[in-house]
Length: 271
Image (cartoon, rainbow, N blue to C red):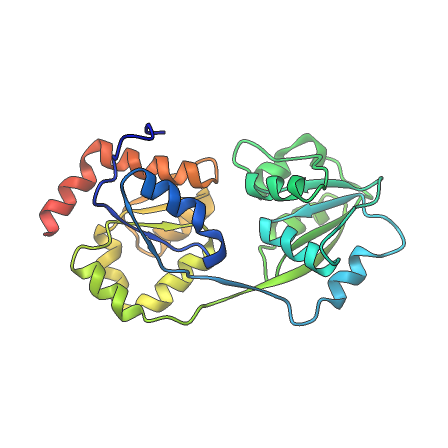
């Protein structure tokens, strides 16, 4: 990472699309490096309409062998369902997908038995020795509504009993995209950050036909190979995957873009 006194992103406009309540850290890192953090939340996170089904799964008489938290949001809304405090049974092991998820669990006083590495994602979790033989094991995946099916399907294929506690939902926030399109066209947006497939899809939905002109020239910094592939499939020409999936890694990936000089040349050519 660049030293605190350096400003490798001086004057660079970086679109931060994290949900409003999760954007502060990334924005602070960008601004510490001299960049302009432009906040355009592409997801709004809210509690599910009816938490009763999830609450019933958490409180079933027989303890789950594994609880898998798919995101930090899954932890936050699990805590909300339980009145702010949650203690898994002694016999239940806890897995966290993502460093932020693990940190949120630990901060809440919940032990973490497994953090998949190196990529902190579902694929790394499935590759871990603990998930190799789950025949007869019961697994509760805690996630948002309509999350990816790959993890649960694979565990079921390996012989596990799998259920989903869906504790939050993702929505497209209200906003004036016309302002951002105009700013983008005037050269005010140099890089876009995307941290989920849902955010990427919402960006495409909001931009409409304008997406094609930006996808051709604007670098997209994403987390995870899955989101990278989605972006390329949607026509984004310059996609960089930051690893691991963290705000610091995203910032470092953006800094490397400008250190190579490629982005700076593109900016000069477009102005």
